[in-house]
Amino acid sequence: MSALDSPLKPSPDATPHGEAAACSCGHRHGHAHLPPASDPLKTDALISARGLSMMRAGREVLSNVDLDVRPGEIVTLIGPNGAGKTTLVRLLLGIEQPTRGRIVKPVRTRIGYVPQRFDVDSTIPMTVASFLALGADASANDIKAALDEAGALRTLNQQLSKLSGGETQRVLIARALLRRPNLLILDEPASGVDFTGEADLYDLIDRLRDKHNLGVLLISHDLHVVMARSDRVICLNGHVCCSGKPEDVSQHAAYVRIFGPHAATALGVYRHHHDHQHDLTGETKPLVEAAAPGRGS
Image (cartoon, rainbow, N blue to C red; front, side, top):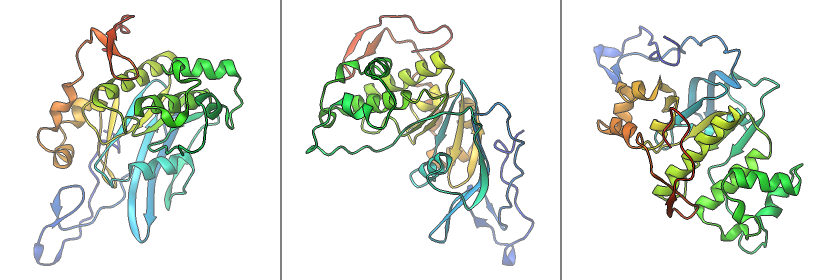
């Protein structure tokens, strides 16, 4: 069992009078947590974190987080609001520096990032094509190809401020693809997208992973799609509560404590075959190509 899958090891110190104290992992005991022993670094990982901790305003936002993302796998970070998911992403991207721990990113790793929020000033006229050309060493053909791959080619000459939530997310994915990444990091990619568009967006991420053998790190607090779409799930609540295959995590006591006893049913919601797909507006249309063998669409 790896350090990520193991419960945090407590110290033997007891509270006064033998009274049990509640802590963030959900156990009641009379002792504090010691940092867990970290796994050895994975040599094939596109990015790794070991013992990552972050203090902010005197409060420990993250504590001793280990993480690896390898080529061809979708790793999903789940957890309640305030669990430290976005903070962890900022550390992995180098936007902030951890208080303790280390991040290892091999030279070969190229990150494409899709942010959680993207606010567009409606008073500034800017087409999608102009936006994607900003700061990018990309030709017009590169931009068209990225939009086409993200399923948003028809937005090419539209005003960025006029796009729907689903269209904006696809444009941001196209922007990430222009970096020719082998690792995609997406922070709440379905934020602002309706229910049918959410499933279609995760279909797109799945296809991109298969086509380019991408490593994908998804951050979400929505369980219904990500649990079924992920190869590995890390449940975060300031520290790693549990991790592993979705079916294992969904049965873990820490997962049930955070998300409730009925949360495991989220795992099966999208494990079925569609006879249709959705366009950018969420409207259904006939399925034009078969799903990849062994994967639902």
